[in-house]
Every structure is written in C-alpha cells, then in structure tokens.
Length: 335
Ligand code: NAD
Ligand code: LMR
Image (cartoon, rainbow, N blue to C red; front, side, top):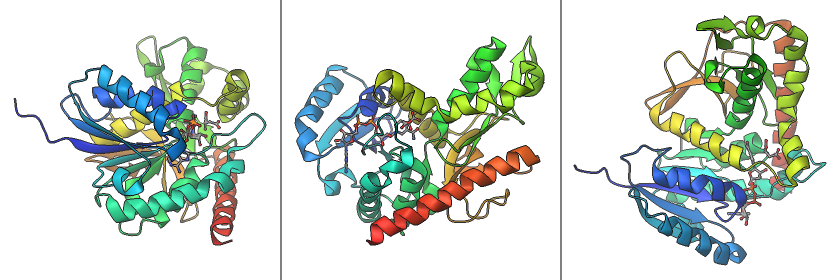
C-alpha cells in the first residue's frame, strides 16, 4: 500500500506536562488518522532541551509505525517551517488563586512572536490550535500577528470545557458521556464561560431526550452545573497543585481530530473562533467559543439556535470579559 507523505505537526511547550500526555496520541495516529505518517516538531525554550531529549527518546522507544521524524528544537525557524498543523501549548500555567487572565502579561508576548513565526515559516493552510492561557486572547493575538494566514485557520481550545459539561450531565443521568450531545460552551475559556444545555440531547433508555427532561432538575442545571464547569480548572489545580494535563491533552486530540476529519453528522462541538460575522450578535474581532460543525477542514458556526434571556445575559457577560482582555493584551504589547 502507498502511504501518504508525512505531515508536519508542531507542538510547543513540548517538554511540559500537557505535551507529555499528548504526544503519544498524536504520534500513534489518533488525531490525524491511522494511515497518516507524521513528522513531529517539538519546540521548547533552551533550558528545557535536556528534558525534551528524554521525551524524544521515549517517542523513539514507542516504535510507532506512523512517526517518521522527531525534531526537538528551541529555534522558531526550525519549529515553524512548512507546518501543516501547529498546537501552541508552550506558556506559563496558572497556580492556585489565579484567574487565567492573570497570565496575560507573562504569555501574550509568546503568542505574538509565534504568530509572526507562523506568518513567516508555516504553510498558508496551516491549522493552528492555541491552548496556552488565556487561550482565546492569545489566539486572537497570534492570528493578528500572522496576516498572511486566513483567520479561519486559528482556533482556541474550549473542548475541555465542552467535555467537562458533557461528563457532568452524563454522570447526573447515569449514561456514558457519548450519550450526551450538543452541549455548548459560549465565550471565554475562563470562569465567565457559559456552558449551555438548552440544545443538548441525552440518549436515555434508547431515546433522545432534551437535557432538561433527562436531568429533571432545572435548579441544578441553571446553578451548580454551570459553576462546576466554569470552575473545574481551578478545582483540578487545587487538588493536583498542577493544572489539568491528561484531560487537556484528550480535548486537544478531540479538537484537532475534528478539524482534520470533520464532526459527526447532527452533532456540534465547541471551539473558540473569530466572532466576525457570527449569527448571535457577539461583538466582532474576538476569539469566542461557539457551537460549530466542521466539514472539509472548514468550520461553520451553527446558526438558528433559539437564545432565551437567561442565555443572552451570560453570553454577553463573557463577551465583555473578552473585550477587556483584548484591550489589556494590546496595551501590554504596545507598552
Ligand atoms: P507546563 O509548565 O508543564 O509546560 C509548559 C511548557 O512550555 C514548559 O516546558 C515551558 O518551558 C514551555 N514554554 C514556555 N515558554 C515557551 C515558549 N516561548 N516557546 C515554547 N515553549 C515554551 O504547563 P502545561 O501544564 O503544559 O500548560 C501549558 C499551558 O496550557 C498553560 O498556559 C496552561 O494554563 C494551558 N492550559 C490550557 C487549557 C485549555 O483548555 N485551553 C487546559 C490546560 C492547560
Ligand atoms: C483548565 O481549564 O484546566 C486549564 O485552562 C488550566 C487552568 O488554568 O484552569
């Protein structure tokens, strides 16, 4: 059988904890397909190169059939060259007591530089996933710094929140997470995000029920459910003294696999994308999480979902936070 040419996939922060949970899944074909050979570019900062060497050795020792090449580097011109996909993880994680936007000052400059490096070295059809926090605003800055790459090629990770919402509903209903579909995360990957189940369906006893009918506890769905999902990242940090890594890596795989191969018929997923021209009246020029469907590597915001007053207020509140974050980021970068 003739194998396809290898694609070039970059993971930044490759010596860090998310990357350690992520690289094996990518290298074995879970994300880009079981017949797609891969060249892995691994970027980290110079002091982490000795650690990165260990990661490279382990990847080699997995003896994986699809992994053609592993290139560890601290140089942008090597890491970003001719990329097909870029997963931008490398940045500082928050610690207990911080909000993700407290990381702006430390992290936003990284995404400005890496946006410029994408612009200079990557293929123009590269798909870029921003994970490093605050993910939406970092994604916006990276895209703005890469004017020659279409803005639609950039997205940020809110799939972890989406998966968290799905799992909470599934546990409440006593069904597997795969029986819960079409939850929506609106807005920022922060504690103002709005996990919305008004359009969610739960397969219970063989039939699809509206989430409110399946759960039968409106107070929980409008209260504790929302705050649990909003604050889940902080809860993991409090317990582990480190931010989520295994679940973040799983969400990255889900997100990139859907970009590469499309979403399932009749289902939508959440991801942060450019708000320009969105059908829900969210202000322009933000990277905002919407329900999307993906086909032929292009996403489309799901149109026509009814929005009640409860949802509207929460969707607007998270948009306001993103406007503030964007303005702060621009101030930091121009200081
Ligand atoms: P980590 O500290 O374990 O690893 C980060 C790695 O990035 C380190 O090896 C560090 O040296 C490297 N790095 C720093 N600056 C870099 C640069 N300029 N270029 C390349 N590499 C660089 O952190 P982690 O737990 O892997 O988390 C990474 C980021 O992902 C954090 O910002 C965290 O908050 C974020 N995160 C986002 C989500 C999400 O859902 N969007 C989920 C989990 C974590
Ligand atoms: C998460 O949601 O787990 C990550 O964004 C890490 C964090 O800072 O909460």
